[in-house]
Length: 418
Ligand SMILES: *Cc1c(COP(=O)(O)O)cnc(C)c1O
Image (cartoon, rainbow, N blue to C red):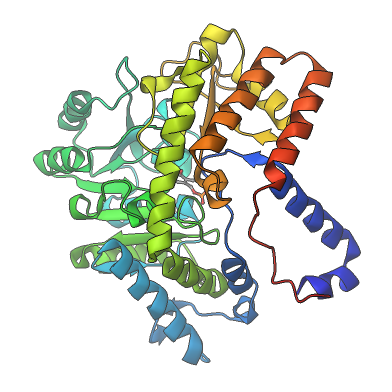
């Protein structure tokens, strides 16, 4: 495939090769990123790119669905088996659409939904004001306590006061376990549907390294490209009671033709995620994050909530007198890729917040273990110490690239030896 591209479009080919090199040269610590396998990427680029399949298996609006029906059913069956769900919709184009669809299944426009506020670690699509989820619904936002933890009493008080149709659990920058049962109990007491967005932790849940929300949520949304290590896409898992409403909200409610090439790659990723080696991978992600957190604390970094239970770490940089953006940009120049982030109750402005977010799914895919986490913490510490010294940053960057060279990344495509 890439051989054809090299000949037909040298310009795009060259850019893709540069990106492949960047991904292998850098320590990729953005907690929502990963390295999909070559098999997942091959499936993503197949003949299914050419196929329209509006509708669901055996209920399509176009002919020629002999193979697509089997592929989508296979993806659904694998999702249900892996997560223990009654029903799976594998069509959402991405996590954002999956969330909007899940809310639309249970709430009318203008009705109330409730989710974690963005600057406290919630996702845009948990009802933040600039998102359609905050504009089309009346969004109530809960926050965190002074320790940076979910405050279930506050959530219950808000729920009793505002009587939302939907309560969302799940986050994009929360380093601790989430008590899905507590959310379910609150939702039940106020007559709301509990929806969990497990986008970040889906791979941990699949591998048994994080409690599953499935028994406690009316519907569970997830992306497939983060810790689950599949193609860019999403799924909604739900109880059979809610299957019809969820399916209708996705198609025809929000989407047209499903991305069958992505759905085939989701099936591949779910197959990979059902293996023993993936379960080991999921547990190693958590062990690595814990070790990285311990070492960062030894270097004097303050961590929001004091550590991590999952794949993610949020550094509060105020004691270092270093804005998140300044550090994340210096780290990027040193081949360490993270993102700046707000911290709970951030005194700084959102475009220049006080935090740095990092995580271990991608480096764990490369085979890195606790020993490498010690080295990574050391690199981060040195960049923070020498943040204004460009020659020091360049030296660290060269060391990082050499360090990374010892760890393979999944090849973009199978090497045919030419
Ligand atoms: C990444 C993420 C999403 C959105 O996924 P996209 O595929 O980027 O649209 C939704 N919710 C959470 C919690 C996320 O982390």
